[in-house]
Amino acid sequence: KACRVLHDLGPELVVITSMTLDGEDDTIAILASQRIQKKKQNGDGTEEEDQIWRIDSPILEGNYTGTGDLCAALFLAWTAKEPDDLESVLPKVISTMYSIIKKTMEEMDGSGTTASKELKLIQSKGIIENPPCLFQAKRL
Figure (cartoon, rainbow, N blue to C red):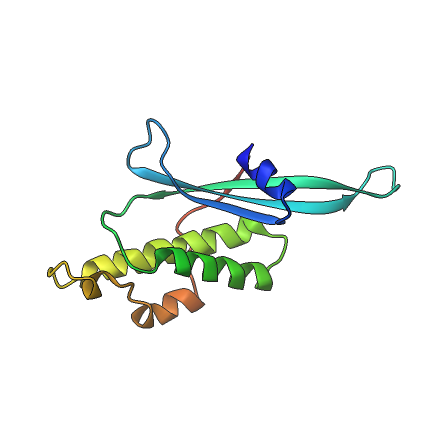
């Protein structure tokens, strides 16, 4: 319902991140919804259709600097490259995010400083360019 309300305000693409749902304490859910104009079956004009996708990822502990910016940048890049294909875009974005956060966790120096919590983007260049396929999106 929230996606529809936001679509009605104008954006064609809505992404809701960092959802923890009851009973799923070790998983984070991400929703992506795209409003698409499609031809009516009778061929007379167009109608709007909301395609809503969900993808789940295990939660990685900690707070890291730059995750929201990275997520937005990845969505922008992949939806520009593969428009109207959230089924393909969503796993790339979330698998990249998961992999970079995991790499950052593994390379933390244990000091707990802000610098140690900054995402290892330069070190993750290969992941960003060729994302692994760790998770699959499900259409709702």
